[in-house]
Length: 142
Image 1 (cartoon, rainbow, N blue to C red):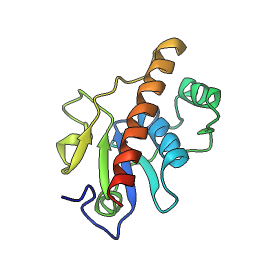
Image 2 (cartoon, rainbow, N blue to C red):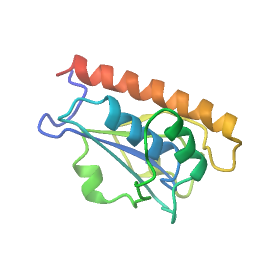
Image 3 (tube, rainbow, N blue to C red):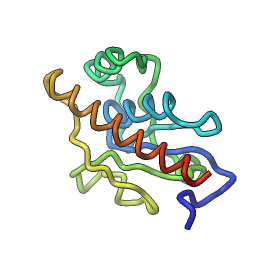
């Protein structure tokens, strides 16, 4: 069985509620590690005006600049055009992306919102590891 449902599609969508922390970090790591023919996109169900500044800071510590990324609302086109969708993890039963998405990975990663920088670093490191595993799976199915 192929990992991606559409051979012609080569994008991965990372989703969470606000698209301000976890999904933005995942998009940044995916852009760094994924094969050139793949793109990473992140979006949320309730986007906010700015990305979490601590998430930006901890990503900068590992040489990835996500400061230019914007919080985006999930669209049907994003969903339709994605080979794989990754839910970063949410417990909100009203606006959680898993309520309306199928064929997704659920990473269940803690939200960095309102967390101290040390905790956000741990979340960043977990996201990096998960993205590396996802990229390895992609490379195995090419």
